[in-house]
Amino acid sequence: MVLTDRNFNTSFFEVAGGAGNILYMKNGTSEALRDGVVVNLENVKRVSDHVPKHLKPLNNEQLGYYLAGLIDGDGHFSKAQQLVITFSSPDAFLAYYLKGRLGYGNVRKVKDKNAYLLIVSNEKGMLNIINLINGKLRTEHRFNQVVNNVLSHTNFQIKIIKRITRNKPEIRLNFQIDQKSVLLLNIIKEYLGGNIGYRKSQDTYYYGSTSFGSAKRVIEYFDRYHLQSRKHISYLR
Image (cartoon, rainbow, N blue to C red; front, side, top):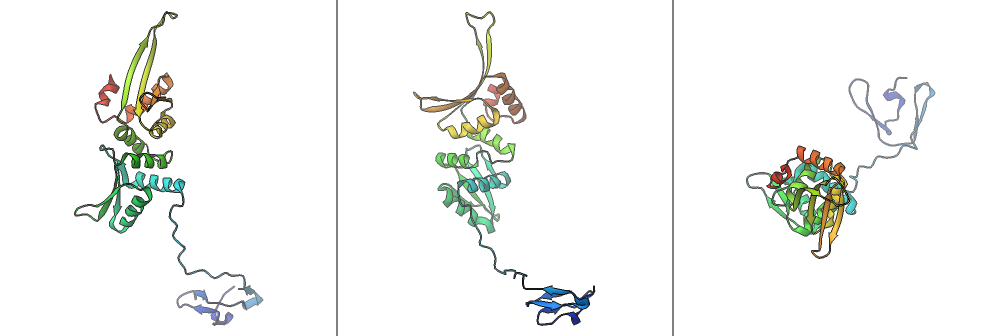
């Protein structure tokens, strides 16, 4: 069926020039086409020309996924135990928005560059961020930065335990991390296995893995992502 301008009332359509006579609907209800075909326009909904309302993250769950995406793409955990996220100048308002939403951090202009940095170094702010992004990071590299740069109290030990009731000594490969907050340790446990305990006398939590299954995962992880401090020597020993 060929459509031409003779088939349409021009109060309903405008015909654009060029090959094929491209047709644009203006308004109306129905029109008869050649060969007796009727097009009912009553049920055709108007397309809104209004831009949908921009919605910011509504809750901590949405904020966590949004923040994890930013960190995966343009952020990193530094050796100074800071979270640093880079924004282009047109997106600087996002840095200020996140600072206000998180309640922590500083926004700085990068000298001689069209970029801004959101820097979070406060301990409570860091714990809040890690709690928000827990289980949401997509790249192992960012997890590695948390282990290397945020978790500093890490120990590797090989323990040989001799018991009177056993003929052979018991060998344990012990990987231990001490922290004031359990949030960081939960991330480690989720990824590597192991157990978490609490020392009431010191008011600290500790992560430990002594089984060979957990030890294997720890070894595979640190063989791939080397510790960047003297802890690497402790690990090798």
